[in-house]
Length: 169
Image (cartoon, rainbow, N blue to C red; front, top):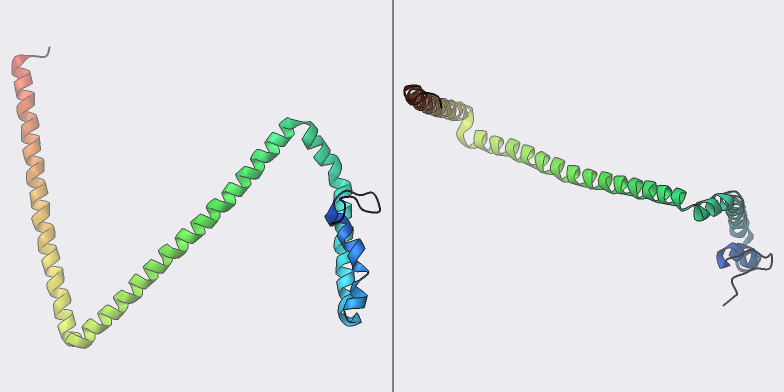
């Protein structure tokens, strides 16, 4: 394996990779494929070199000042966690929407089968019977609740009268 410094004195194996092996491409590939590939490699290498030249002072400053590095690390962790939460939210919402859509279409199919089995008149009779049943249940429960409320009010009044007879201490 090669050393980690290239001929030009730059550090790193990856920085010298395009220069060392790009010359072999025209020999191994046809010119119609090698020329665009060489153009892409040289452009990417130029962008990488420019970023290295301009970002190395910033990286040096971050390494020498741990406060800035800590803040940047916290911001990076915060950003990554928000991205993960967004992915989780989108995944959960996908499944929730899927379940609701399946339930909706299952209800539509079920009502369709119900109408097909009983006919339109039988379906209307069944719906009216269900509505009457649930209205009767609602009235029964509402009268029970009113009775419990009156019973609780009566107990509160009795406690208040007992407190009044004893006097406030």
